[in-house]
Picture (cartoon, rainbow, N blue to C red):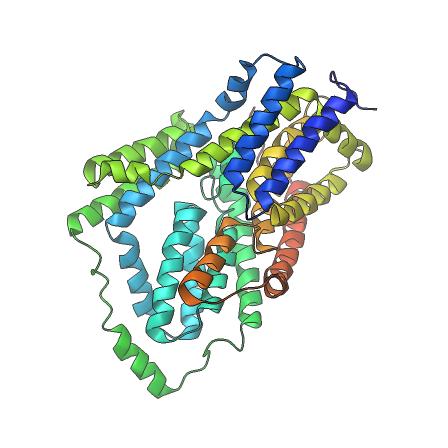
Amino acid sequence: MPTASSPAWVMLLFAGVMMATFVGVAVERFHKTVAALCGAAVLIILSMALDLFPYSKVYEFIKEDLNIFGVIIGTGILVDVVGKSGLFHFLSMWIVRLTGGRAGSLFVTLCVVTFLFVSVLTIVPAMLILSSLVLVICRSLGYKPMPLLLSVAICANSGAIATFASGLPNIMIGTAASIPYVDFLKVSLPYAALSLVIAIIGLRFFFRNDLPWKQSESDKAALKQQIEGFDPWAMVEDRRVLFRSATILIATVCGFALAQPLGVGMDFIAMVGATAALLFSGKGVEDAIGKVNWTVILFFMGLFVIIGCVKETGALKWVAEQVIAFSGNQIALLIPLMGVFSAVASSIVDNIPVAATLIPIVQDISGGDTGVPAEPLWWTLIICCNLGGNGTPIGSISCVIAIYALKKEAGVHVGWGTFLKLGGAIMLIQVIGAILYVMMLHWQGWIPAIQS
């Protein structure tokens, strides 16, 4: 029987509502923000009806993660303002001119640029920018859009594990575990690069017959002449604003790396960067603030309340106890368990609720006198939650954006079968590699200790 203060039936009831909410998140016809808010409302009503805890406790659930909202708001404003300066279009056009439009060079360059964009800008704004760019390039050069757009979507999930701020699960887990920004560069960035190589090889093989990988000299000459007509400065209204925007973006990224030594939070750096962008580079302040992804913020609020309510019943603690009992406190079993479960769950539901659910479980598994080190479990969760998104068409926001853009702008439908053959195979290799990578780092003592 569960060893918790709440009766078993209460724990099962609350866990059932949480799982029903996650099903609602996974169903496309039901908006995930609405699902999260409905689940939160139901659990609050149940908590009050059963007299489990006072309503004021709800504010504590949200208060613990307020810094996540600051990072989302700050980076959202910053990316919108910088995007309006024409900087991203400028960089994109230079990429096309640099590759000469050749399919092979363009494919590899777009994959690498996606990795870099997501590392700096986070996955949503980077995907919105890159999906538009890829469609324009494909129309201009006559290439099929599916190979390049799906390649960008899958490589985006590798970029999402590169830094603290590159993916929402990273921000959530990094905040909960107090992982410094620099530790991401030491631990997850190397495997992010390796997973990118795995993705590029898999994508190149899968799309071996869908792009003109080998082109004649006459085709290359025609492409060169066509690309020379592309103007990198076409979207730049004021070059001074572009340079200021680039400076602010670089300074903000550096600020993320120096946040802990400076004794400030990532949310403060993000908000300072956003304020500087509005002050020195922004024109439409109201429009920039309106572009913040408020649906994601409301989704987080509902999710944090749900997790907090379920945690209060002791259900998550009981799950942690069962995991410990099953593994016998052996880290060699806990890492594969955490990696496989988080990756598969993320591919079915969404990596954000999966990360939010597993955070308190990892805290319980590694807390107290269990003797289980927390660091390898945190890194397994970070890497596998993000890479799990490659498994299905709804597994990550990057894949959702790419498939939606293909259907709406190019009339191309990507079925589950096609995507599972591509993304599922790549995810399998990446997740197995991630588990082996974290285990190797742990056994070699190369994972930095987290200062509590």
